[in-house]
Amino acid sequence: MGVYLSSEFYICARDIETDRYENVDELKEGNPMSRFKHETYAYGLNKKHKQYKTLYLYCGYNRIAKTSRLEEGGVMYINIDFSTAEAALEWDQCQEQIASVAVDIAWLERTFSQHYVEMNDDDVYRRRYQNYRMSMQK
Image (cartoon, rainbow, N blue to C red):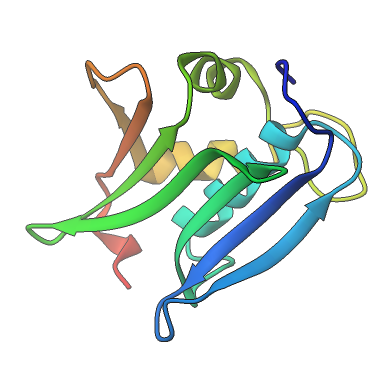
């Protein structure tokens, strides 16, 4: 992963009902961005993290990325906002990883791609995906 001031990475989330931050996972092995990518795919597919409105990747106290769901006109979007353009490029280049398996494999990427399409966005700090299959409603 890029150059960061800490080697402590965490996935945190904000609860829908209480709006409180919760620590979801401490990332001690593997590629933190790859792990975050897997959690984002699971979140977008409603396989995990249904009780959260946002997911975050932190390095120490610095936020690296934020994933959120947004519904506009009955269509679901997944937005990922990055703290740096380098972090966004790292997202583009990495594969996903699951916990305890530090191997880059497309665990949920194919399924995610069957439901979401990446939208063009001029913002180098953002990735936006639109759900083009209405079967993924809440």
